[in-house]
Length: 281
Image 1 (cartoon, rainbow, N blue to C red):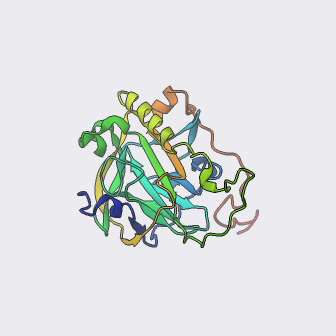
Image 2: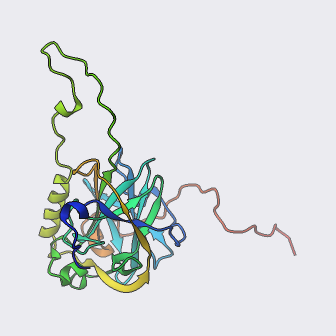
Image 3: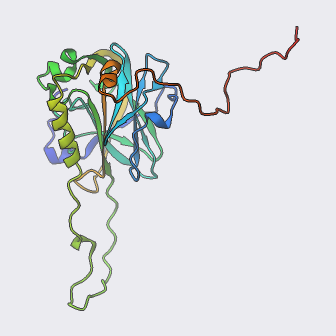
């Protein structure tokens, strides 16, 4: 996708709002969801060629990994677990999934309404279609083919809160030294994307052994509309990343067991239909 002709400041507040999803909801499990405590957006990867199953996330220190299957199409599922609108800038292999630019938190993104879940199936090609995300060889990844292989294997989101109308200023309680107590006096929070930059540096170092990337698949219908969104801050309130690679590499790295066991948790609905009783004819 070509760069927007809009000025940078204006482009930063023009975002794409996802339309009502036509997909059936994926079979969810907390094992496949990246949702740091206190953060509003849950991130998970859905394998669309494996019955819409949510890929299990495997922890490795502060990072989480999912095992992709070469040739399988996938979707990025995001759930806004808050009561307010948020803007989510989606990066796949270090590339903005809407604009095609090398990803940065200041760029365009998807707006999620309160409690909304969306599935992003591919690289945005227009307001009506995408090129499907598909697990493919590192060399065939879209980022690699466009000369940006350093961050292949990382899916990330930067989440922004929406600015609220400013209320009329009220008198402040003075301190003994005559200075008013203001929230602005508090020290600035550390830059939220510092951890993301560190992770991207690690990804670049490991690109020689990374085997999977995300390809530019077939075109698919995926309509969206445009809306305005004013960010409450230039810093994202949440940055979350999921690493991915082929199963054999995750096993070799000691992240994933060679023979993972199926979960043995009790289920309310263990089977689909009522069986005949013994002796029934």
